Image 1 (cartoon, rainbow, N blue to C red):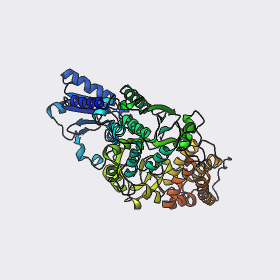
Image 2 (spheres, helix red, strand yellow):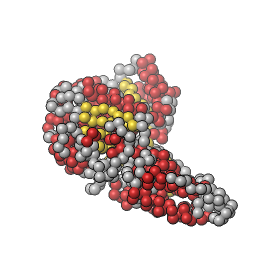
Image 3 (tube, rainbow, N blue to C red):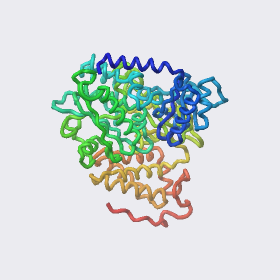
Image 4 (cartoon, rainbow, N blue to C red):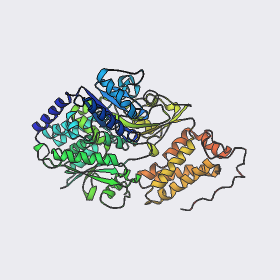
Length: 561
């Protein structure tokens, strides 16, 4: 496909869309699908066919619209009305609403009237919920692959990297390091073959960001990877996806096939000399593959174990070749940066942390789901404007970054959302999970829950993590069951320091984060569990504080190894 043919395709498809007076978008994400979204779509199509209006009303099953707590969701364009908690019985009224403007009281709301949507700034999620994720023509009709065409036609590879550096994009899936710096290292590396790897393996508890992006707009990630291949001189890319993310895998596979058939991937892209292919590699669902060295070992067919931190994928990655490993959200940002310019992206957010960040908002807020906010927005605005406040009880803390992050208590609720501010509080942006907690949550029990995650996810290669995570969980388990003593408190703090300083990879080094964060801000809760045998939140398997004194409590034997 030549550049001219590509632009004619996009123009023709946009003319086709203009023939429809109304578009009905049915959320097809996992949550809405489980609640009958597929049946709702079929019912809407059946009614349109029976009324003979299929030529004027377009019905699309999309990716995640975002307002997950109110699903199943139906969104109407161009009126931008949203129906919540939809059932198949509502299909007749929705079609009637589109045809006659009939409206029942309080049955629908405009997105412009909902703070959940108005407080967001969507770049990565711009198309999510508004296109058919299984149609490459729909993506092209909404400006898709124009950034790749622009890069190949008008920007040299080094110019793409300069644009990325001027955007000040920081790694959305890791420690916030400059993305342009890594791209430059891989581009300068001398090798006959290079690789681009997209890490889509993140599946921490409370984080579904990668999955939501891939299910809602897979072509945007493919386009970002192709631009990366062009910039660093790679001709082969891999998307490493958790095997249990079946819908994401299916949609990415279909997107790759569609792009190859239209010469948007493969050989001689846009009739140029640039070749780039993308293959899928499925992971077994082990969290250690969040470490790029373990991920690369898994793609190579070896056991997914991390290597020492001195080993750099940008210099010696897949099969010993320079490899660019980056996150789903990083690649999804690239097309917008190339189209609008690095300075445009840098103007969003803050001076040190530009652009937006996608989060999965969950917990005890009234509203939750997939959101995208500008960097620097106060955490309070996410909890009370986008999330609608606490359902019941009092706000206690936000646990940010999943198991690898930490907690941010009420006194720091006005903290701006960025890498540096979160790090100062011992929290992390990480995989994008924001779990809002109320006063019914015990912070010790929450730390115990996350310690069990690390204990089960440890690969076993290094002794500090293999043994330390078991001991960490055992101590916290004794605390929440009323069997701990003062010695456990000192051991807990010593063990956390040991794990951070001696573990081989980020999984072991991050294992004590939730403990250290809750210890810092909620130390009295730990002291109450040990000295008073009392859980202030009333949620632990705790004996009555008067049932036994510390000397009378029989301690469980420690596990060996």
